[in-house]
Image: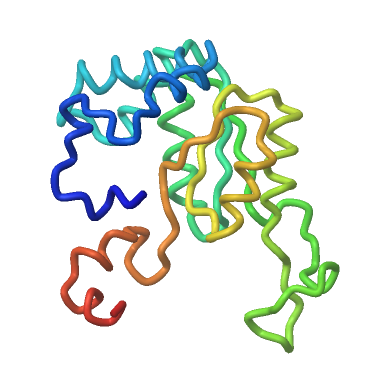
Length: 188
C-alpha cells in the first residue's frame, strides 16, 4: 500500500482498489459517524472560505461541544492565550501548559538541553489527565513537541485535534520544509 505514489487516485472517483470498503465501513461507530457528519458539514458549507481556527469553532458548535481543552507548549503561551481568548467567546475553556507539575527531567533520566542546569520535563500525560478530570469534550493541541503530542493523544479521554504543529525552525509550519527548495535538498 503506497497511496502517496499512486498516479491515478481513482479512489477520488469511488474506486475501491483494495476491495475493502464494505469491511472498513463496519469499523465506524455511531460516535465516528457523528464526527464525520460535522466535519463534512463544515467542509461543504465553508470550503476554501474559513481558516483552520474558524473551522475549529464551527466544528465545535456543530458537535454541540461546550467545554474545550487546550494543551499547549510553554513556548507558545502567547498564542495559547490568544486562542483561549477567542474560544472563550463561545465555549468554556481549560488550558494546561506543558510544564505542569514542574517535574525534573532527572526523575525519568531524560536527556537535557543544558546538562549543567535544572530542567523541567514536558508533561503531556499530566496535561491529558488534568483535562480528563475537567471533563473537556474536545482537546486542542497547540505546539506540543514531537512525541509529546502522541502521548497526549493516547492519554486524552476526549477527542483531540491539532491546531498548531511545533516546528521551531520553520515558524511552526512543518510543510515549509517541503515547499522550500533549500529544505527539499537538505532533506535528501
